[in-house]
Image 1 (cartoon, rainbow, N blue to C red):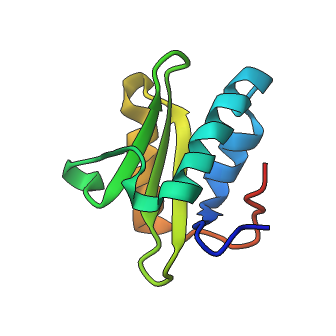
Image 2: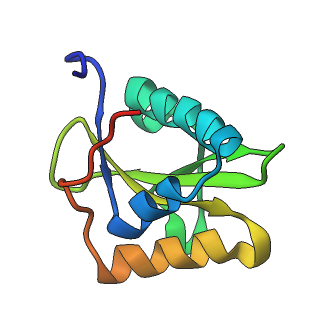
Amino acid sequence: MSTPREHHLKYFRQAAKEKQHLDGSQLKVVNKGLKRIKVQGMQAGKPLTGNLAGCREIKHRDLGIRIIFRKDPSLNKVIDIVGIGKREDKIVYKEARHRIDHHSPTSDVDDSH
């Protein structure tokens, strides 16, 4: 159960699937990043620019994994997890833009770790 100070995380369906496909060492590091987002909200990570302006990312350089997230446009204290993936060929960024344009986050994906 989250404390009142923490943000609630909602995942785009594909981002939830990306999280499920991480191996144990990747999941451990990503969960730390997700916890940081829950506590710090939009103060966590670094702001993105260009067609992902308004989004932020947390980088895990050693694993090459990025977590792309944004403030939910309609709900206070809710952060949308847009994508979790490798930076290779900027795929995680392209997919994040596509999801924002064509999909909405779902609230039926559990954000517990």
